[in-house]
Image (cartoon, rainbow, N blue to C red):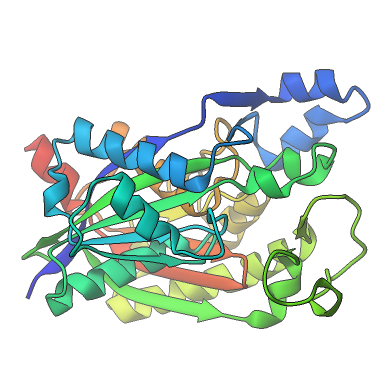
Amino acid sequence: MRFAEIGPIAIHLPTRSESNAQLQELFPEWDVPTIAEKTGIHCRYLAEPNETSADLAVAAAEKLFQEHNVDRESIDFVLLCTQTPDYPLPTTACLLQQRLGLRTNTGALDFNLGCSGFVYGLAIADGLIRSGAAKRVLLITSETYSKYIDAEDRSLRTIFGDAAAATLIDGRDSLSLSAFQFGTDGTGADTLIVGDGGCRNPRDSIKPRHRKRWKSRLYMDGPSLISFSVSAVPKLVDEVLAAAEMTFEQIDVFLLHQATYKMLAMLQERLGLDDHKLPIRLAKFGNTVSSSLPILITDMRSERRLHPDKPSMLIGFGVGWSWAGCVWRDTWSARLQS
């Protein structure tokens, strides 16, 4: 049996960036330093008005093909995780197949998950490879949350950034991804939601949990999301460890979705971890939703912090509510360094 391995990753960011200094100049009445202290974010990248998730996804995939000498003919399946698709239909992954020049016998599908999406995508790719349905999977995460955010929304504009990541998932004989665990609680749907644009009449759609303060299409109840995360993530860590038959001390580094500094700092305290064991790296990019974990992995790889004999844990959590985790050994980087 073949098993999925996280291979090379290519990150693509829009050319337009927005710093806290620029925001302060635009909105002198905002207390940007205090906001930055809570979020830990100092800069975000934003898609242009006519730039979509598919555009970012294509750029990331082309970068992956070129920088890592990946033959596009070798791709058997495309998985696209996005909550900002180009159209309600057709499937954006089908558009990627055509734009990337992939074979017409390549499988392609979208899945609508946010901050837990990368781990879910790894599990889907692992299933495709273990079953023999695919040998090589292109997993793309691409989000343009900025299109849901009103320009004057002090709460959301200071947090979310747009980005795409293209990850090559290869089949290998050795096991590098294991102990996948998942969770879902739809009672939290009203804490992070875009209530229009689907087939549900907006008058009958799920209402925000509290009064909507801003004009953004996206609504977020930050305190409820923090409460959910601080409760769900430690339980998820225990469940992954139990499935892997491992102890807490055996995990070298915990790689968590990069939401905000405040949320991650609370999880550090709850889990008893420091910056070395639970890194916080969102200052330069903001919360990039499903792309935050591949961006973090790329950062950690550049520092040679990941080793095949020292397992890591990947944890995604957020909108839905949805959460997912697994144990991962970076066998691909090890081969490059040997």
